[in-house]
Length: 141
Ligand SMILES: [Zn+2]
Image (tube, rainbow, N blue to C red):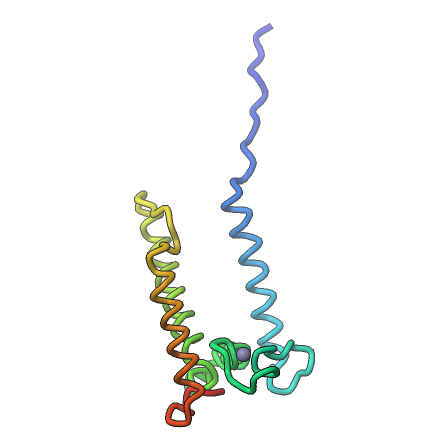
């Protein structure tokens, strides 16, 4: 009786499962924003910070900017939320660089290094202050 033990395939790693869930969620959100204009649809949640203070937070105009980007209206997207547009571009560049390094067999461990957290938070804070000043009204949605 010479039988080989049954082959057991390894389950997908948690990183792949999380990536698939993230991709499906991103596609669902992008599809919703693509087909339902945030400027005319009422089901999108409004900004609580803006409702309470009348000021623009760093995320104000982000959904409208995403709608504009999905419809290739880049200047409208920049007008709605420039921070979102640049952050999305930086994320895409970082993702491509990360994928290339992984493909070449030299993967990085951290997609988002902790040393970038404070500069990004300060950048978002500066953007928030500027877009609420009259001289920088062009940064407001
Ligand atoms: Zn807001």
